[in-house]
Amino acid sequence: MSTAYLASLPRRHQAHENVGISSICSAHPMVIEATLRHGLTSGAPVLIEATCNQVNHEGGYTGMTPADFRRFVEEIAAKVGFDTSRLILGGDHLGPNPWKSLPAEEAMGKAEAMVDAFLKAGFTKIHLDTSMGCAGESVALADEVTAERAARLAAVSERAAKESGFDLPVYVIGTEVPIPGGAMEEIEELAVTDPEAALATVEVHRAAFAARGLEDAFARAIGVVVQPGVEYGNENIVFYDRAKAASLSAVLSKMPQFVFEAHSTDYQPVELLAGLVDDGFPILKVGPALTFAYREALYGLDQIAVELDGLSPEETLKHAMEDVLVGDPREWAKYYHGSEAEKRINRHFSYSDRIRYYWPQPKAVAAVTTLLTRLKGRQLPLPLVSQYLGALYPAVAEGRLAATPEALILANIDRVVSTYAAAARTPAV
Image 1 (cartoon, rainbow, N blue to C red):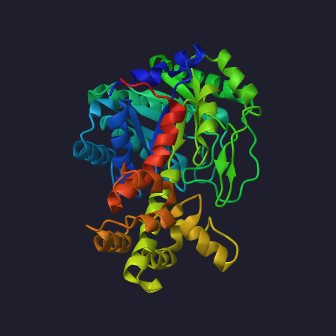
Image 2 (image 1 turned 90 degrees about the vertical axis):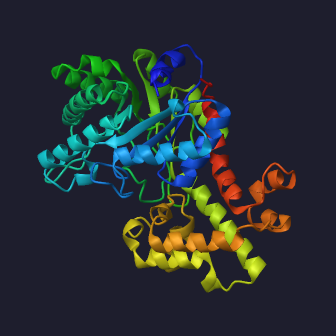
């Protein structure tokens, strides 16, 4: 789809239109399906993004290349009848992060190959993130080094885009957020980005792009990633405080080409998300909250199955997932701390939702399939829906939502999608 709407966001903010777009950062098929079903009804453009860790030219943790991811999304779109002319695909945190254990030149070579693959697959919203140090370098790099590496990737992006036949991309720069994957501890409070630092990020990137003759590419840069003071830890959420971000928002008047992109907005209530949009953060990124809602629905159905069929604890989905998680701690062990009970609770219920990395594993797929097969074709009793999926009960009781497993899962994910859509107020096209 044309990136015209994204390109219009800075102008719209300057005109006080207060509209934006939610960025769906997930590779889970039911999240994608719920998102596209919502878009089918709203008529608005849909933005779906993949991170450098999820999807890259080597497969990422999903096993998908950018071309694979595009086909994956388009197949779901065909299933639900969504017009892909309203679909925008984005690449998030594109840079050397997956290979930062390698020497910088080797890591950047892989990042260049990744960017080439994203652009040739028709991804048209590109977040360049080269802020991380590689082998032998400091964890955080000087702004000039970060910008020079971003411009290097932009040169690859421009060349690949012109060869691809797709629209030329729009760019997002900056990275004042935690690494892809989320924070690693409880967070009490966050420092909002200094307004002068945001201005400096833009200017150092402008100079680096110009040094490579990429002025046309930089003219399509629309967003800067900054920290507005929102984040979530394993068990807590730092909510948006508009007053604390006021001076950062005000600096947009000095950089009218740009808006801010807000990462880690998961679990913020709709009124605060709308405040972010109004304050110049019209690109709202959400990821773990979507798969958190998926897990909530599955575990609710799991408990309904226990009541219906008298299952023992060892026969539940939750028990099966505990076996999967304990058997392969790589994706959670360095994030979850405390007593064994605290770690067990976080493995399943943490806001970080690191269980999301495990749903594609064969044992997890088999356990979910067993649960859904058990409940297939059965109209679930209203009192059990009320008890274990209470947020969905009114729609079921009123006949607006079928009490079937798939419908309930999609509806629970849609609660998150709808919250972001209501905050972003993206117009139909």
